[in-house]
View 1 (spheres, rainbow, N blue to C red):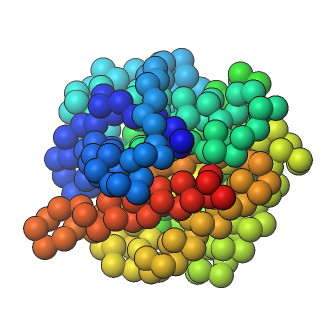
View 2 (cartoon, rainbow, N blue to C red):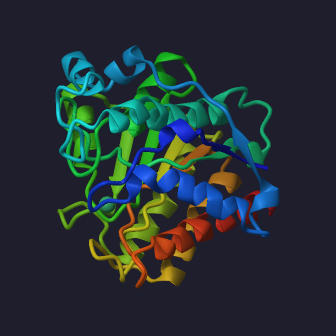
Length: 295
Ligand SMILES: [Zn+2]
């Protein structure tokens, strides 16, 4: 079974351009209705991230201002429903990351891969929101695992279309040297904004975080907005994205690298304005995750 760390409290209304705040519930409903996926996923309860856990990654004054709805969130407003959801979106990724890194001696591949149906992390800076991101759950999880002795090194494979500038800002602000942050986001020198470069980067990095090399964990943003049809994308076809997901999961299992994946961005809509094209891509990622575990 693939554990999915979902609670309805993760969800907030999607009021602007981005559907991400409401996406967890839609994704979960989609998976529950899918005959090929539903039997192989189990939904797991978790606690929300605490203020102290979030403040490892962010300026405490920023954390308090966001939670008290005094500072605009990543959607540019102070909607208390967004603020209420934030400890749960970061909490989902954190709980999933703890799950895959606890008792690594009891290795069973399928229990070392977990899903957090979350988004809205990688543009969140140390003391600033942006780009639909408010708290950086990737960094909240990484810093908690390090503090709790559950991992020595963390690989963030950010396959969202866009550059994880918030992640990079927090790494630089805190002077962290045990996180590898690889991304195909953006078109900056050093990013991997082409298919061979991206696949090569995955092939090179993931094995480094396997059980034979270190006590590591992989946080994989399986973004859907790098699809060629995405209005904010993109350079990968549906088949390319399947190849990407398959490679990440295959390498994690083969090298026994604990891995958590999440949803990240995705902005396609069908003619009726529904996010079905995005759901289809996330469904494909889960299908590949299940296939890797079974194999
Ligand atoms: Zn994006």
